[in-house]
Length: 165
Image (cartoon, rainbow, N blue to C red; front, side, top):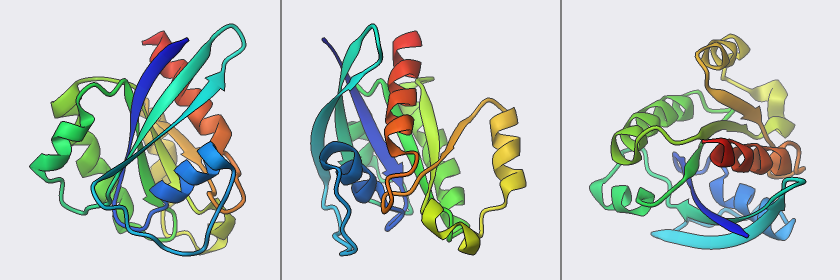
C-alpha cells in the first residue's frame, strides 16, 4: 500500500476539519471547533488498481501564513486549498496559501475545494472566477461537508493526481 501525506489549507472556519471528519468518519457536526496546531487522521482510498493510504494533516486556519505552519507542509505529496463559497475573502486567502505552499514544497498536486455547496444560493464566489482558475489548470471541486457532496470524489481525485505526479 502506498502512503501519501496531504495537508488541508485555508482560512478560519472554511470547513477544513468538517471535510476531514466527513471523509474519515462519515460524520458532520454543526459545532465549530477551532483546530489548534495540527490534527492528523488517515484513511485508505481504493483507486481500482491501487490502494492509497492518505495521511491527512488538518492544519489550523489562519489568514496569515505563519512560518511555523510551513514546517507542517514538509513531506506533503499534495494539498487541498479550502475556501468557503459564502465568503469571497477566503478565496483570496487560498491564493496566498497556494503561493506559500508552492514556495515551500514545490509543484505538487493540489485541489481548490469550494466548500458549503449546500449553501450555493448564498455564495459570494463567482462561477466565472472558478472557471478562469480551471482554465489555468487548477483543479476545482465544489464540496459540502454537511451533505457529503463531492467530498469522497475530491479526496480520490487528489490521490489519483499524486500517483500520476
